[in-house]
Image (cartoon, rainbow, N blue to C red; front, side, top):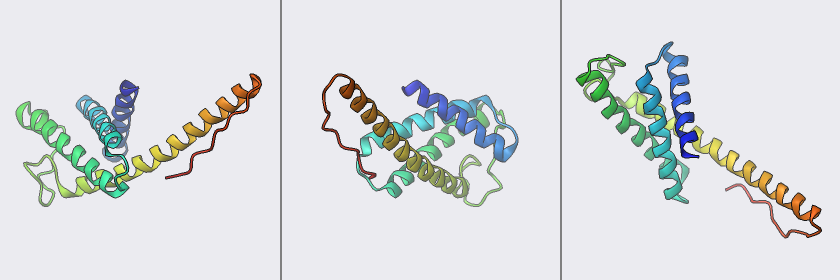
Length: 148
């Protein structure tokens, strides 16, 4: 399952790059996969932390990963994958508040979507169990989960 999450992050990050920049780099796919996987692992541990705090932490995760990947691919290997040196308050041209805010908004969207998907998955699982129990002649005492 974690590999699928990694692939989704790789594809999603690359898609965002294509949508807004018109191109991407293979290192961005790896970065996106790593970011989404780390974010998922964090949200599993965060429990009932408010969504806004989870999104802020997610933006921090994405920004820190992007910073270190930027140091590697842009400053050490000089691949010039991106350059934020023209953005206000940038750090070494690798990260800036503007993109950290965009990561925050994206993390809010990811959290909202994952909440809906988790609820739908639970509903499908319960429906499948009820059907299975009915076929076997048992009545299941299962409740449908509420949105949280």
